Image (tube, rainbow, N blue to C red; front, side, top):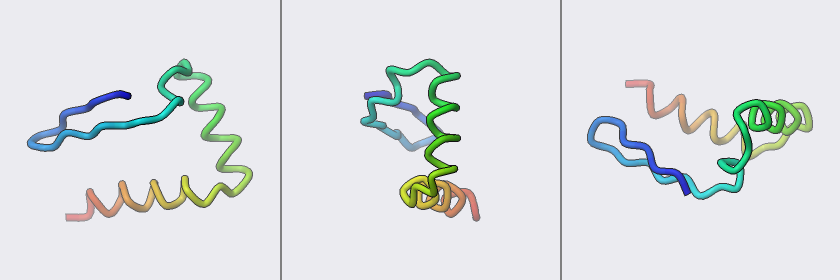
Length: 53
């Protein structure tokens, strides 16, 4: 679990990806994106939607 505070918001991430190094995380995301993993596309869209104000 990793917790981030941004402004008045707290984001808690429950993911085994946090055990990976930055380089390993980047490689994993790249590989999954190339596979067409739908969840990553949905996460990107959700993040973009949060910043569309």
